[in-house]
Length: 113
Length: 111
Image 1: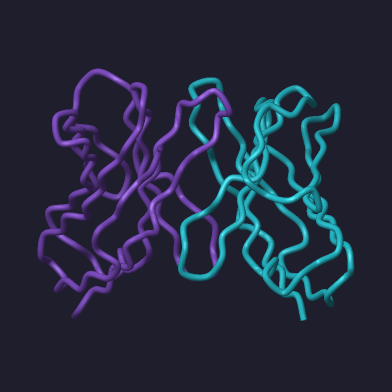
Image 2 (image 1 turned 45 degrees about the horizontal axis):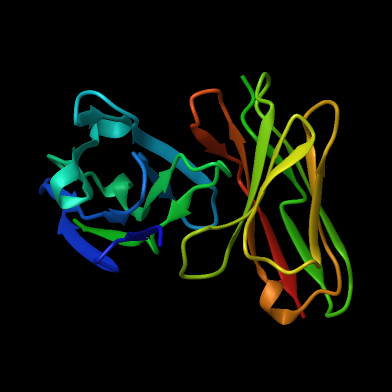
């Protein structure tokens, strides 16, 4: 079955510290992979995406993610977190015939001053 | 350029009522998808429409229906509302490279 797992429900980091959010997927075909961010009460904003090619992808707001096929992972990273990064982060996989995205349950990021 | 727009932003209904949610995609995008996001969960796929035809349907009851108009805008209809239908309903506009861009959502509360 197709699925996305985000093992960490809630992460707290200090401002200026590095960040890594984990994402593992199960998908029968070559996946399209996405990270979205959601602020409270808002819609989803696309951070970055991976379709093919270079396995390290750069996104907006200084985020990057690395696709590791052997580990079925697509972890999100940022070298230095800002207080404005506090939000919920969703990993998603797509590319199927229905065109739908399958989302993980999300990781809530809190940032300590 | 305008992003995906949804209306209304908030809605309160009572059990058994019917609701219609509306979405306008990004200009030039011909595909619209609908998702339901309940509190504390990731979005769940409901429907995808492309060129006014249903191209995908998630695991939702027949009380949920949708359509897409010639201008590519879309409506999601939910009949016989249940308390469990309370959620944030998200519309996404898809480009030719399979990337989905989301609107701000409609928050539905069923009492």
